[in-house]
Length: 90
Length: 417
Figure 1: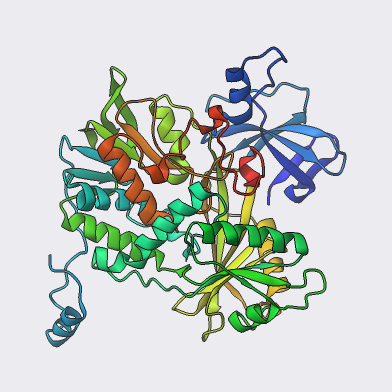
Figure 2: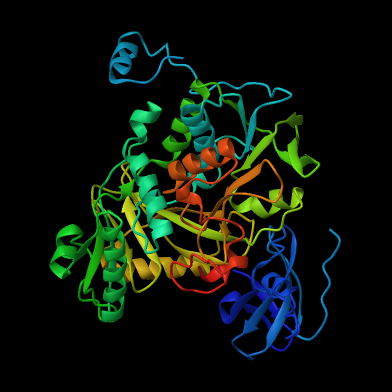
């Protein structure tokens, strides 16, 4: 069971959250070409290590960016969706 | 090394079983091979076997990070079937099922292939329509499919709760030729048969880099030194992204966890494979007596090889909804494998932008049934450096071309496939 520290509600079980994937991909502008949209929709880094990902908390309905390790499942940070979150070096 | 046979078991029994040797050699890696297959699971070993058996390419190394058979080959629920909707998928899986049907004769090894029948239950008119459509698609491609009514389901699996209050069973789509095989024996059988044809199976040899020069692959760097080859095939399941990144290739794959479970051992209880339509749940019984079952993904990217309890709880709940008698049993073991999930739920058996590098990947949670078909098509793709017609659609480029093979119409969300 993951415990995700929601910045609005405090630590909660993963079952209160919906996962929505890699939060490092950014939607291209409407003028973006096909390659940009192909990359946005399909290309994923899929790192073995630290991963920045979207979770939505069903409790407060807020979208969060979460920094989680894909081998240990350690969660190091959870911030509101508009805040920047950087991946540590190691 | 002599092969396995009933006569040999008899003869060894008379002489104290002193003549049995290891099923494959433990060779030292040579500096160069004609083909390197990265990954000593079912798909990698099958690739090496079919390279030797079908294409006469015997100077082959299979490199495995750990020992043989401890990855996803030993972590699945052992189901074999070809009941797919899309022609690209059902033709491929049917080819694989036909290879399964004569696999023991091909390998000279008992993989305990049992065509005990697979039935997918449906619980609503919409699900029945979808099952009929899938069954018709299978029959149009020459694959056996049979629509069962409630009595048909009762005859096939009497323990199913047909009158479940929330998900009453209306019937099922059966594929009688589907069934199960012993997963460990599949890995050992392919390893034995490939080794007997001259393939070097090198365990405890982790690939740490891919050597390329002039846009072509030249070999791999490993924990046991450099090994050269003009052709390298990847068969590394959940680690495809990691290996492809070594070659500078981005693949549309996310790695996710899938759990499997085994109950305590029982006398024969379920003699087919049954899947639930009201939740993600599938179950069969192993020859040892344990019920083997599983469900959906844990739902977030992971390379952790261990599952979490919320999904386990869902799987148990779905199982008890379908077969209430399971509520009296105890779970014995639970584990997870790392799945290479693709945006459309279909695999890749293809060449890559790096010349000489091929892959069989993106098996989502359908990899076990595909083992011989994947190896057969991957071996063809390695030998010819172009796909066979059976795997021509399984390219990395299909998303660019808009030719997705989205069996269930889920859209490009790897964790929802």
